[in-house]
Image: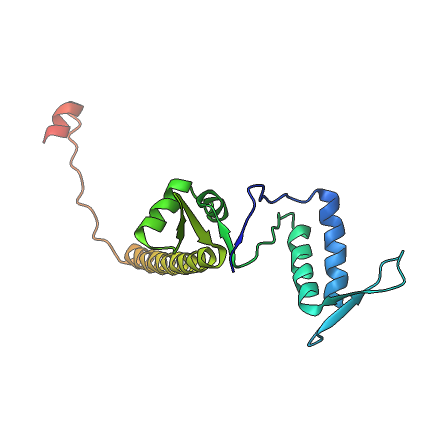
Length: 181
């Protein structure tokens, strides 16, 4: 079942104080090896009963804290969520018209809801992974081509070049006359 992301969907960057606290919390959580545990218990200072969490939720929390500690904004989006074209554009860091073009070309699946297009978050991320991989391959090829050209350039610089023929300059003639000969 698809979940619509509300119109107020946004990410908020953590403050410096949040980043410091997230760094310490992330470090403490990383020190706790959850391994194959199915659940984890967290006890708050003002409660006797611990809160029981799935270990997977705690691992996700650790990742969230790591990103916050780096100053990165974090948003939690269900993979089945449906995004508007503007939300999809924001996540890809491109314009909305470009996303619409990708949808019309069939690069990203979508469903029409009246006159609106809705994109599943997991379809958008699949497109992003594929696009990132293609971009990475192009960058690797450019780097290889650059190294090949640099090696070729270095080898041609070391080849002996025949000396240029001497230029005869008649001191009795004017500069202009010497240049035209």
